[in-house]
Image (tube, rainbow, N blue to C red):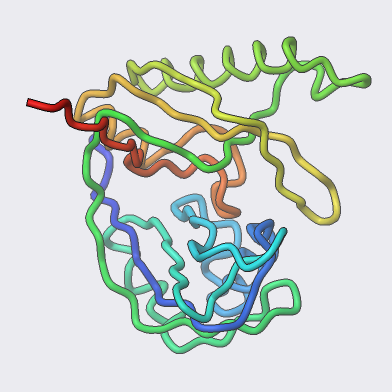
Length: 215
C-alpha cells in the first residue's frame, strides 16, 4: 500500500454575524461556487465552522469563527482563492480571511463531530435505536479494519445533518487507543461519507484533565 500524501488543515478566519449550526451542506455549496475545483473533489474534507453558540440553532461569528479545510499539501494552492471570498451560507453572508496552515498531529484519541454511514436496512420505521447503533458501530469498525487501523470506537450521541432538505442521522464518534501512524491515517481518510459537508472529519480529542490530587 502506498503511503498517504501529507495532509494539512487550512484555517480561514470567518467574519460575519450568525450561521445555522447545521450548515455543512450549504457551506460546501458556497465553497464549490467560489472554487469550482472543490465540487466533487475526493481529496477534500471540510470541517464545519467553529464558533460560539449564539442561540438555539445559531452560531455567533462576530467574536470568533474559523473554517478548517483538510487537503493534501499539494492542493493548498487550489483553495487560496477563498482568501477574501464572500460566501452565502444558507442566506447568511460570511467573508473568509487569509488562512494559516496546520500540519496534522497524531493523537491517541480522535473525535468527529458527526459521522454518517450507510447501514443495511437504513434507519427503519419505527426507529430501532439499539439495532441501528449496533449496525452503525459494526460498519465503522469494518471501515477501520479495511484501512488497517486498530482503535476503540465509541458513539458519543446521535446527531443529524440536513442535505437538500433531507435529514440524515449519524453520531458523534470517538476513536481511542490509536498509534501515531493509525491516528494520521484516520485523520486523512475519516469514516463514512459526506466529508465535504463536515462529516467523518477527525481531530485530536479535547479531553478534560482530571483534577490534580492533593499532595
